[in-house]
Length: 457
Length: 165
Image 1 (tube, each protein chain N blue to C red):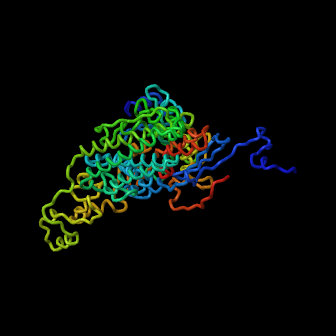
Image 2 (image 1 turned 90 degrees about the vertical axis):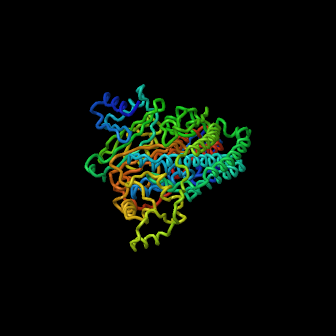
Image 3 (image 1 turned 45 degrees about the vertical axis):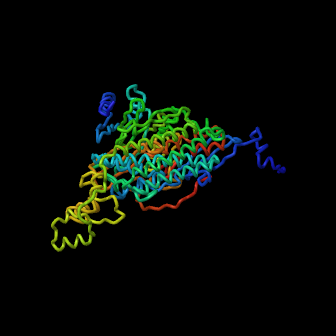
């Protein structure tokens, strides 16, 4: 056998293809520094150009749908946190609303407003993360730090309301865990002031930036027809100029009473997606401000006459037969249950005994409340929607987030299907990156905002 | 168009091939005979007043342990269609027997069906006739069984085998 030269070995010269070159196969992922999620792109490269790409997902599959079938309805709420871990509140509400639809109940006005407010705050933090991360991948590290700073303000709000930053589990079927804390509106307006400043700074840093435009404009584009055929929704579809937003097309909660615009793009490329997301954050802030102005219910922490007592002392008094006026005396709740006092509880939860746990005062303080509590938490009892099926869609940060639940009349969902907003864009990702440079894969992948948790479930 | 009109339109066109039609909690559902599925989907997509141009979701349900349906057709494949121009929705279902789990593929109509059908094949083992590339989507090739089937125990563990090539 004749000696092969280095060029023959490494460049494939003389290998019989005729042109003296052959395509190179490159794996991007599953663990790649520029991938903010575990996914594998198997790309065939001709020089620097991606000729063909195969996207492989499933690395974060953790049987969400199967797990949901195993426990009572409310047990699935913590799992929904982990679907889109950048805006977990929207998933919480989407799931809870689907069960409510199945039950045929309507939540309280105040709860609707709270859900709108918390959803929009989540949407802003989701968009901040997406833009920040994709700018960072283009070398704009400052933008990433600014965006994370702004997200911090919003997550502090979320933390104050839900008690957690990421694993919030705030929704309950029929309501929310607790009412808004006092002074929430002022804190929100302060946080929004900071966020607006950050957005203004980022806008001046990126929108007219030559490097940013060169990397984003005309890159990763998808046509309007393709986007519709692939069932892409959310900012990606709106960047193509299609005005579809679940908040407008099928208004849920109180979105039909609030004024907001749907920002549209034109070319469906990365730059338009960036602009759409930037504009949507402003609209979300508008929605929150309007909602905070018109939220009914007023003050939640009503003053009780009489001093609160300890639950144990309460029980003791009851045992001694000193029951007179006992139900009128408020119980001192643990700080973990702040916001769950009876008054707040009634404002944000439906008054349906078959659905919502009673306020803690009742559970500790009266036999009816205790029985009601047990009926809902005992195995085989609990929340039992009638036989049937329902599909409910909310506008997630990435598009239509749908839940399809089938009930067999028992206390566990028979089947829970989550329609992840991320999956259709990832199915179309190969269309966006084929024919473009390999370096463009990274910003395109960033602008798609793939969230492994909901993609792989 | 609201759900009732759409259902009336479909029943007028397909007659007895619509096995069942109902409205539950505002969701209109048409259960269609398997042989007529593709024709119905084409009709839904191309009829000028229906124009369901988005296949929003495609999934399946295993009714093997559903009270009252244990003996009936085991699977239901569920299509959620949405129309952008008309802003209306419909749910189309087709029942599939356990011993012949094959449904015609909707990939020629909507590109989104590609991955959704791969996922249903992966999770339920329902085949889609005419699908260009029916591989598993979330699980790996060597995985045994279909995890969302009701007879697949939740605590079954399988060795994780890395990807080929």
